[in-house]
Amino acid sequence: MRRTPPESEWLTLTYLAAMLGVTPMTVWRWGQNEKLSFPKPTVINTRRYWHRDEINAWMRARAVGRTSTAA
Image 1: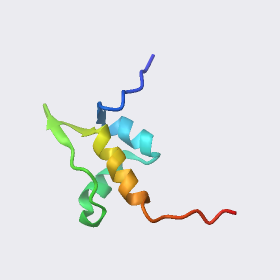
Image 2 (image 1 turned 45 degrees about the vertical axis):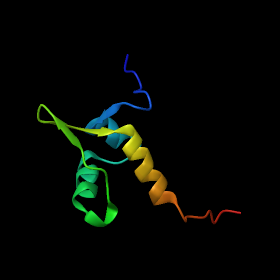
Image 3 (image 1 turned 135 degrees about the vertical axis):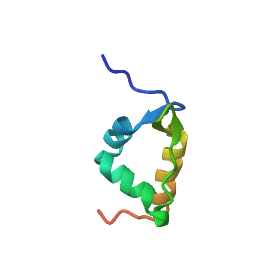
Image 4 (image 1 turned 90 degrees about the vertical axis):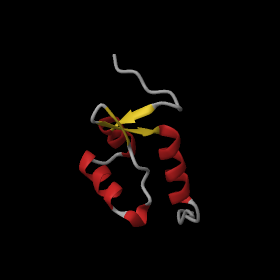
């Protein structure tokens, strides 16, 4: 059974991509695009990990100023 990481845990590329609803390649592209300010991964034993808190902060910053057009 696969468990869901708690809020303050490190995320693998596979888990992060699934959480964001994109492919791992999209995560890589976001990391290459300086305009997006996507959080940089931490490398541990040649594997990349993103901290959930940093991803959540990035998503909140991207959502600021957006308004719903649905009535």
